[in-house]
Every structure is written in C-alpha cells, then in structure tokens.
Amino acid sequence: MDWLLFLIFLATCFAAGATGALFPPGDWYKSLSKPPWTPPDWVFPVTWTVLYLCIAAAAARAAPIDGSAYAMAFFALQIALNTLWTPVFFGLRKMAGGMVVIVALWTAVAITLVLFWRLDLVAGLLFVPYLVWVSIAAALNFSVWRRNTGAGAVSPG
Amino acid sequence: MDWLLFLIFLATCFAAGATGALFPPGDWYKSLSKPPWTPPDWVFPVTWTVLYLCIAAAAARAAPIDGSAYAMAFFALQIALNTLWTPVFFGLRKMAGGMVVIVALWTAVAITLVLFWRLDLVAGLLFVPYLVWVSIAAALNFSVWRRNTGAGAVSPG
Image (cartoon, rainbow over all chains, first blue to last red; front, side, top):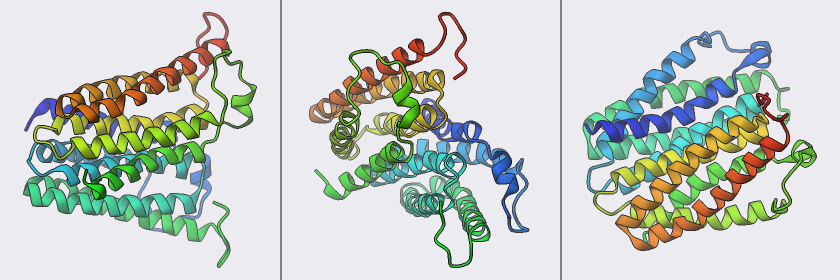
C-alpha cells in the first residue's frame, strides 16, 4: 500500500470525522426517546476511528488501479455525505433531514463497496464494516425520528 | 466527457453545496463588521453553482486518466473540507475554526489543481476559478474574524 496516499485519504476521513467533535450529541440527543438497542455514546467515536482507518486503507488500495474512476467518484460522494450528516442531525437537529442524508450515504457506500470489490477484494472487504455501521446508524436515525415525532405527523425536522 | 461520471461528481458537489442552504448566513452574519469589498449575498450561491459545475467537469475529465490516484485523493479531501466549512462558520459561528478549515481547503484545492493540470490541461483550468474564489472567501473569513474580535484577543470562535 502507498502510505502517503493512505495518509491523504485518512486526512479526508479526519475532515469528515471532525464533525463528530464539532457537533457533539449533547443534552438534546440525551433527552430523545431512543430504542433499547441504542449503542452507548462511547461506542461511536471508537467505531468511527476504526472505520476511518479501514476506509482510508480501502481507498489507498483502490485509487491507483486502472479503471477506478467510478469507484473514486462514489468515494468522493460518500465522504461528502458522511461530512454532511452530523451537522444536519446534531447541528440542526433535523431528524428527517438526517434520514435523507443517511439513506443517500448508505446508497453511496454500498455502490463504493461493490466497485472497490471489483477492483480489489481487500478494498471491498475493508468497506463491509462501514456499510454495516451506516445500516445501524440509519436504523437508529429512523427509530429516533419516529419515536420523537407524533404518529403520522409531518416531522418539523 | 463521461456524462454519468460528471453527474456523480455533480451530486458530490451538491452534497457539499447543500450546507449553503442548510446553514444560511442569517442575522448573525448580517450583524458582523465586514470589509468594504465584501460581495453582496446573492453573489455566493450564483458563484458556487458555476464553480460546482466546473469542479464536477474537471473531476470527470481527470478521474479516468491513468495515474490519477493522488489527484482523486486530494479531490476527496477538498470536497470533505468544502462540506465542513459552512457548518463550522455559519452553523457554529466559529470564525477562527472556519479559518483553519478554509486554509486547509485552499491548500487541498491548490494541490488538486496542480495534479489535475498535469493529467489534463482543461481539468486544471476548470479548477482555477475555484482556487480564486476560495482565496477571496479565505480573505473574507480572515477579515471578518479580525474585525469582530478584540485586537490581540483570543477569538472565542
């Protein structure tokens, strides 16, 4: 693996991950009704740190391979959506808006995974935990949104 | 140009640009002391729309070229930083934090421009207006930050 390339992609993930520190969950999130399977708060930064290492390693393996144009386009799309989600959910407290972003993110991650897999098996495998975690995060976003808005009501977020 | 690839990169820019609608300047920005050369508010969305079209076109030209790995790594870095700036500046109202992000963004855009230029002259040229505009935005961020914090004081932002 090209380590300089890995570090540039890691810096990219760091830019996305900085939103976690800049827009912390805080009292608002604590006050929300959450499903019983909600992971404890400390799990999120730990998981994201591991995921960002996997994401950067996957990109550093895939990017130099001929024919990676679409893979890198979807990689750029997913990292922009990843950066966007936290400010929308925790910054603006828009639970419905967060849902829109995370469904788009899930789709972009899934497509990137498939395209990475075709280029390099290891790169594809390194994206699997990311897709699993975004699935959990999307389910949590959905559950929190439904639990904290009136049944059938249009969400203010 | 591969138009499907262009549309994926345009969606990426749209994710970054959505922050402009989600975190509008509002009364806080209006109340700040600004330099006399500050562009009027309507200039920003118009300029960004044109820039995003140029950015997506540049990426769609550069990505399929062999040896584009570093270019696409810095492209991913700049789009993450681009997505990050607006929530930091307008969402959190962190003028010093915004300065950190925009200096990193300027650097990533400049490096992407050089790497795109080496791959494809047109792709490099399409990034020139972006670098010019980020330079203006960085100067504006700096000026607003200095004008709205005490001389020599540590900024609360």
